[in-house]
Length: 161
Image 1 (tube, rainbow, N blue to C red):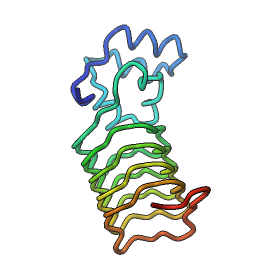
Image 2: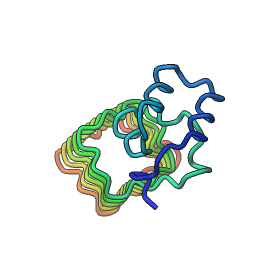
Image 3: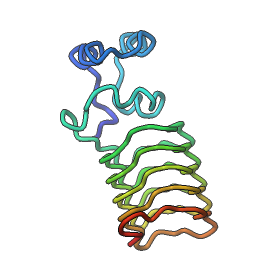
Image 4: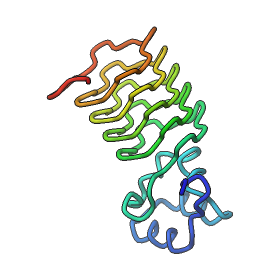
């Protein structure tokens, strides 16, 4: 099931409270019924408030995150198959082991992002900024990297496949 429509229940809000989430974040959660899709799209910095990977499969396949601000988000192991991340700000994001197969990352800002062991096969990375990004073990087979700046990319232990 896609997380786009999974509603954040009062039980989830209790988990956020127990993890000492900020009052601003808790107020946002309580204001109206929210979904994990909204949380990722609008408040990525709060997205990792709980270890949701064990409780909800992070399936955001084909989600539209055009121009989303995901700066510094911890999105490891997330499933973004064929998602639209065109012009998204993913500066410093942790996307290790993420499934980005066929994703649209055109003109995305991925400087300092950790894409180690990520599946970027057949992704569209045209024009993406990838300065100082980490690609250790990443799969870029069939990816379109035309007009992409791969300056200072880090291929630590394993390189790009």
